[in-house]
Structure formats: C-alpha cells, structure tokens
Length: 195
Image (tube, rainbow, N blue to C red; front, top):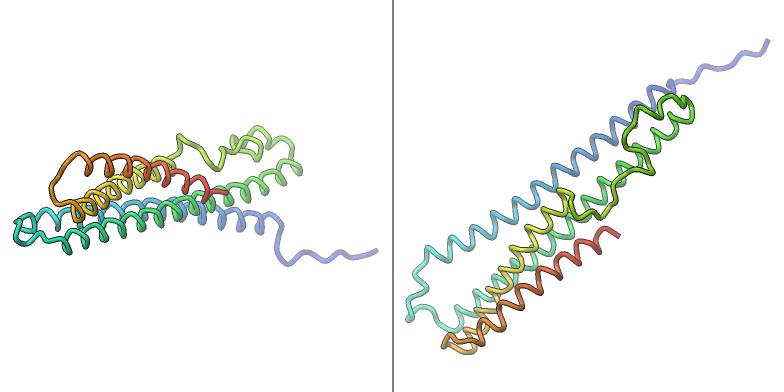
C-alpha cells in the first residue's frame, strides 16, 4: 500500500495566510493614501500661513526678487502636488492589485467549492475599475489637483507681478487659466499613473 506524504503546510492555512497578507497590503495602501494627501494639505497651508503672517506686502520689502522667490516656491509646491498625485495613483494601483490577488484566491476556492460562489460579493469579474471617478482615491486626487491648480495660479500671478509690477488684467488673464489648466493636467497625471 503506497503511503502519501502529508504536506508540511495545509493548503487551507497557506491560502488563509496569503489572503491575510494581501488584505493587510490593501489596508496599508488605503492608509498611505490618506497620509499623502494630508501631508500636501499641511505643506501648502503652512506656506500660505507663513506668507500671510509676514510683512512682505509692505512695498519697500516686496521687491522683484522676493516676487520671483514666491513664484518659485509656489511652482515647487505645484511639483510636490504632482508627486502626490502620482503617489495616490500608484497606491490606488497597489490596492487594485491586492484586490486582484484576493480574488484569485476566491476564484480558486469557488472552483474547489462551488457553493462559495454566493458568499463573495466582489469577484474578479465584478471588481471595481482601477480608475473610478467616484472612488475615495479619485476624490483625494481631485482635492490635491484643485489645490495644486490654485498654487500654480498663484505662482503665475507672482511671476507676472515680478515682471509687471502694476496689477492689471494681464495678471488675472495669465494666472486663472494657468491654474485651471493645472487642475486638468494633474487629473490626467493621476489617470496616467493608474496604467
């Protein structure tokens, strides 16, 4: 009578451990998304608070180099916003990959026990899309995009102010469309980062 070796690790234990690990990575991706968008909001808020609390609006101290400096700082914040957008997209992608991995285990379990088919709401074929406009991740990316757009508009305003000191319609004609365009650029970057 042939003897079969008992596997060192039970299949159920292995699948449960893998499932737990994948669930933990999905949870970490969600937590990281919240931290990333919060960090950007704090960074922008701190700079704006510092700007408003200074006395740089005194004409004697608000020189052309200072205006260029503020323009540069706001461009830097816009670039940080772009970095946050890419990170949010990558974290959404990581969450999605975790869901695919979990569903692969569920699909395997369903093949082994077809009665489990009714137990799972999310299956591979019903998983939400990676890019979904009404997801929390998209709302966070939209929030960062709006702030980045505002910050970029301010950067352009300071740049035009440094070049043309008298505030006029030109300042607004450049700053407002530049800020609006940056919002759409940021959202396009978010969508691209999910590919």
